[in-house]
Length: 112
Image (cartoon, rainbow, N blue to C red; front, side, top):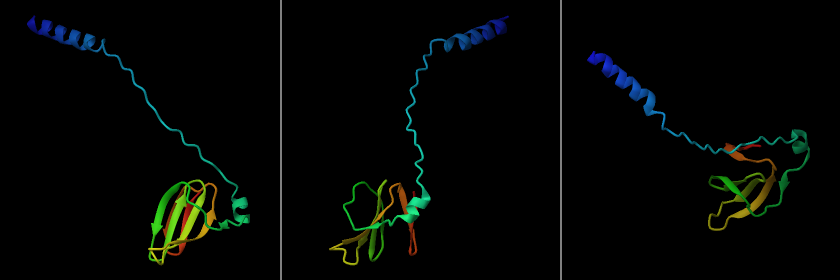
């Protein structure tokens, strides 16, 4: 008999203990949308431009003679860093959908 009363109390406690919970939860997120560019237009247009001011710096690659700075959504800046006390901007690669860059050997890869 006492076992039945014990299990009844435990069952009642389990059933009614959660009834006062209020589960209010707010979830915020950022939605990313892909931006597609016409690859043929990018190939036809000359993307090499004179150097310009970095507007939205992203990844930076440094080696002995070059400094390469990604400009988010704009392109890639090439800077002559052979004299680190006086770096000289040389070129700007205009890639309007540029997001990230990766350098391997003599190649610059761009996630556009």
